[in-house]
Amino acid sequence: MIRIVVADDQPVVREGFAAILNSQADMEVVGSAADGRELLAQVAKQTPDIAVVDVRMPVLDGIAATAQITARHPQTKVLILTTFDLDEFVYEALRAGASGFMLKDAQAARLVEGVRLVADGSMLLGPNVTRRLVSDFADHAPEPLAGLGDLTPREHDVLLAIARGLSNTEIGSELFVTEQTVKSHVAAILRKLQCRDRIQLVIAAYESGLLR
Image 1 (tube, rainbow, N blue to C red):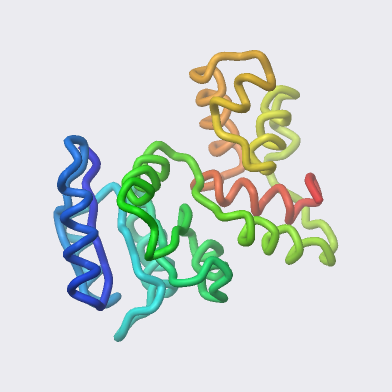
Image 2 (image 1 turned 180 degrees about the vertical axis):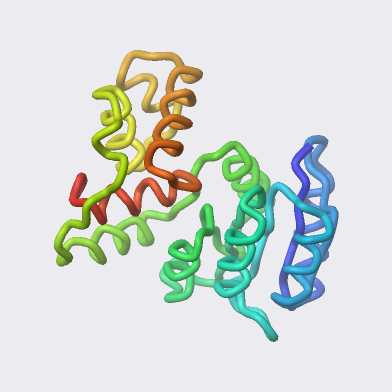
């Protein structure tokens, strides 16, 4: 069961998302919040697997709330909701530790799929945000990445594939290994590079100049 907290300052949106997610057999909305401060309280109380967070909220916005959640409650992954896929705040939220983002007007099936992807450890990025990540690091000198030398050649290949946005299934097909083997490699890479999730792996790959 995927435990979820939903945060949005619009009651109709918040209740609508909760109804959609609660209708799934493998999901349960265990809390809701109208602002960032309420969100932090709900996450501390419920320890959910996923926090579905509107990027624009009163009292404490989604970016600040995301940073505090990822610092204090690393077991909770954050899925950011935004009005525009090039919202300036989305990129900052990803840097704060969010595991992905999606548009608020996405269809119900897309919301459900997004929550499952993030819960499974996958990243959820739109192509515009991916391009912004690339361009942001393109003009910066590479920074040393601690632990990169500890990766095996196969783990190095998996990291490059993750940075290109491939799913575990796609990586397995490309490298001719099972999806379970890919998951084992991903877990090892996360541990060696001390990254929280795939989003951080992508950022690390570009920051280090491994992929440009």
